[in-house]
Length: 637
Ligand code: PRX
Image (cartoon, rainbow, N blue to C red; front, side, top):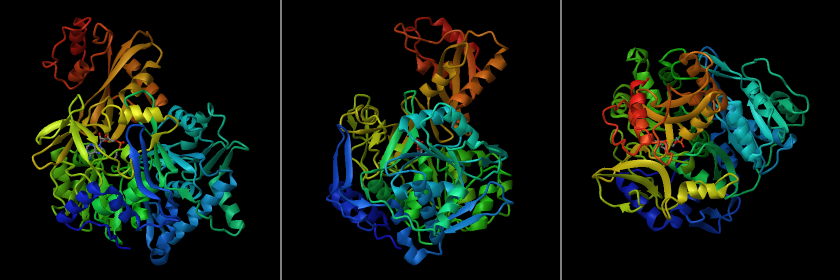
């Protein structure tokens, strides 16, 4: 497969961008014509940001798995679709060709059907990074069930909240997952979640770690047994369900500035076209290359650039179960050497943590197969960018700094590898079809360059989120109501003299810890559930490796144990309520919080304290009790 819509020069990029803005329907209609549709669209785009209502390829019908698998069987049946590297380097890796993936996805789609899953049903997937996770995702898409993947670092309570919100009656999980030296008991976590979710009808359990699990009669079944039944029935293909372009493909929960995560909904047609288009163009993918995205499929990056983007492009996607530092900090480099990886796509946090080990782990590792490097999830500092460029790319691999979000489905701002210019710590220019702009606090567009503002997008791209599951009004108020007729990203950005964008970070109460989004309100809610906690306020602070750390100021009236023990108890509570990923890095017990006379917490002051800018707190005269600030400053941890 070649990609007629692959941009091959800077001028080509400029032309594509211009055409996409002047004639979005013509532009995206042309790109979409290179996919397999069961029925063509009546209209390419219909939209207004007021409701909001965004519809791409209306009237068209398709199944995304036919585009990700079946259409490659003619010329790529024996090419690896997925290469899987296990957590333990002494275990065997696995390869699934497109033909094998086809068989497995069909089998599992039949398993889902046999277990009563129907088109439109919500299926929660809570698994480690094993090929069966991709098979589960694609099996759902095959029959038109809406998958909702939950990252393995979320707790039983978080899972229960998501199951209830989506009213998901089906779960796919494994006994456990390996992550470095840890064995995470996923099925046990699911069992805890299901205590409050009696509506769940079926749990399909894949055996991976072979840890002991309880299997409840009538509810829980083994994946392997169910597959065997399909095999015994002659292994029939599972016809790909006909989906409307605007039918939901998946829900993915993400944190916002309120306490409750939102179920971002993406649909079949636009998401497919956009993830494929951005994959092919940002990374400049060439047929046969091996693409290694180190994200977890529990996050949007894994959905779009391990599964749907690469597979729809007939690429070979490498999935890694483990972590960059296990069994040692040379693991990524070993994997690149072993499989002759061409594209490495990872997070700044991973780069920073590996940088800290020095150059030793790179010795005797052949990285010469690398052609393109990418980063995602958080701003990359210049030092990490330069290290990545010098020691990993050996100054010959373009680095793409890709800015996007769960809500955007695919990359919105990034350079195109080797085609458009890069600049350390800049995401640079928008993708074709994307019109970014900066606004001031009042929503007035800032047209100058060399300015900072709130980053908005003027018109829809094909993978725009369509709604937040079960609550469209929430989608409107969160993203489309802050500034009239604009999509508001929640990020701030700087635009330089060339019109290049540098993302400066969130401007709302959302933290970005190791590239993972966590709402401060969510963490506060969890802390406040701990017995003895009166009130809390959570802010971010700069962290050398994680980008941002979580700093919690807590008013605690309990008497149980010493301060250190209390901090550990609070951490355990957060871990239980949200999951280990939201554990505060620092907890300071305080007797009061800086509040205005109307009772609002002055987070600006707390942020300054957390950032250690103790002499630069600013005006405290409007506070109800300015003395509290001095006390907090003295007790800083
Ligand atoms: O703040 C931005 C940051 O990550 C946020 C989106 O998080 P999430 O929905 O979890 O998706 C992460 C993976 C796409 C954004 O609002 N972010 C993402 N990419 C970058 C970034 N910040 C700076 N530079 C990036 N390249």
